[in-house]
Image (cartoon, rainbow, N blue to C red):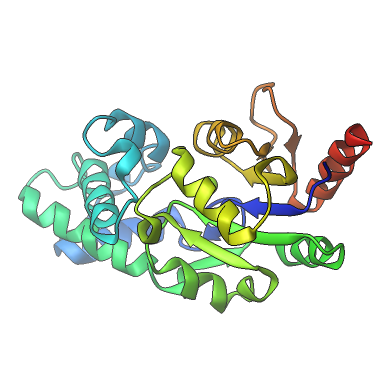
Length: 242
Ligand SMILES: [Mg+2]
C-alpha cells in the first residue's frame, strides 16, 4: 500500500473567510437597522461549540442540504446577536443571519491560505489524486473555482450535495468512489479533530490535522503547521509500507 490520493477539508484548511470581526458586526447592524455599540462587538461565539451544542437538533446534520446550512447559520448569528440587539424580534435576528449566509456564498468573501496553491501543485506534480470533502453548501464549487483551486483538484464533494456530512462515513466513502482509490491509499487533511481526523479515520483513511496556529494539544494523528508539510506525512506513510 502506498498513498495515491490526498483529500482536503475546505474551511480553514484550504480557504478562510475574508471579513474581519468589525465588518461582520457592521453587516449585522446594517441588516437590523440599528447601531451595535463597541461593548457588544466582541469576538463571535465559537462555531464548533455552537455546532456541537445542537447535537440531536441538527448538529451533525447541519450541512446535509443548503436549507439546513442556512438554518444553522441563521440560528448561529441570532445567538451571536442575543446581547447586541436586545430589542430585535427573533425573526429579525434570523433574517440578519440568513443575509449573512448569503453574503458568505460570495467567492469574494473567501481566500486561500498563502501556501495552498503551492502545496496542491506539488502534490499534483507527484501524480497524486486530489479532492475536497467538505461540510458546505452547493456554493462551495464556485468559491473554490474563483480561487483557482478546482483546477488542481480531481473532484469536489460538498455535504449538501451528498446529503451526508462529516464525521459520518458516507461522505468519505462517496469521495473515495469519486477518487477511485482505496481508503488506506488516501491521506485526509483537515483542521477539525472530530469531523476531519475521527471521521476520515473511521472511513479507513490516514488522517492529518492541520494546525496553523500551533494551538492543538498532542493527538493520535500527524499534525502539520502548513499544507506544504503534508507530503512529508505521505512520505512517512509510504516508507512504513515498504
Ligand atoms: Mg474546516
